Length: 348
Ligand SMILES: NC(=O)c1ccc[n+]([C@@H]2O[C@H](COP(=O)([O-])OP(=O)(O)OC[C@H]3O[C@@H](n4cnc5c(N)ncnc54)[C@H](OP(=O)(O)O)[C@@H]3O)[C@@H](O)[C@H]2O)c1
Ligand SMILES: [Zn+2]
View (cartoon, rainbow, N blue to C red):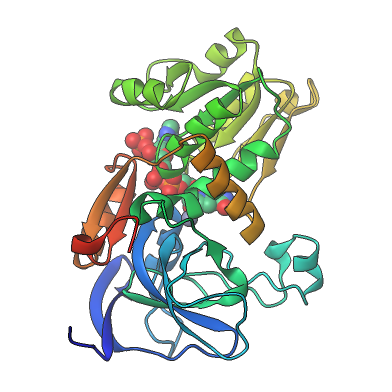
């Protein structure tokens, strides 16, 4: 076996354009580990990195924050982690116990945020450096490509649903059936909710029902709010489709004191009619991914309930195609980059 001193990574060359490059293998700094990446999911949020001009003078960024791999080197000051250990890295991977916000579980307001694939290089690469404090333990028996989407798409929807206030038997609607939405439907079903999947077109109906939806709602031909009201109103709508208009159309379908929980980040505003909010005390709230502890709980719950993403895998050199197809919503349902397709799988 030849030992290479460089590795392949995919960087943002220009807005919307990715490029495969060769880079020297870096040493992990204090508190960091070096990961040999096995798989990385392609999340819609990667567009925040890919569609943006690189900062003046900064090296081109490597996107990707649904990373699964194995530790292959430890930086100084790292304890509790071993070489060869299976780990994952999600979007917010810099939780810092010395930061007052992080100590309260509020990593969003961290004083020194590490946002994988945005403030640091991410997982569209064979190698990645990560803060040890942001690592997620990934069980060895999970397939790398199937575990990767759980680290952001899974975590985000699991956390948003379990914190939504909905209780077993409540009507919960998942708006959008992409990377996040198709996992959300599975989580909602296993959490005991009457699960409505809202998407566009008849072609997603069968898959939505297979994933656990009790009702498929085709937003192209049905009136979303009317159907939801016919079901007694949704206690929670989880907005995973990046469309302000689509999300706002669900609000009149909420039950009194129901909630639209927004996780998608559309380019346009979400317009609201105050009458829908005031009469019935409905609410619109946002939810952002979760902590390392949340992520390990999301993985454990997914494992317990056999919740698995439906994926299409691509070799690293096809990252552009994977990204473009994700942006066109042409993937069923998560694109995952495999660094070494011949050796992918669970065990070493
Ligand atoms: N809050 C967080 O922490 C967090 C974490 C991860 C991602 N996100 C955000 O969540 C969003 C979804 O990410 P993703 O990776 O799941 O994206 P994705 O895989 O591209 O899925 C988005 C889905 O929305 C559907 N959609 C678009 N417009 C629609 C409409 N009007 N009605 C119904 N469905 C519609 C698309 O399908 P069709 O076009 O075929 O209808 C597509 O399947 C993105 O905005 C992403 O940035 C947020
Ligand atoms: Zn993501």
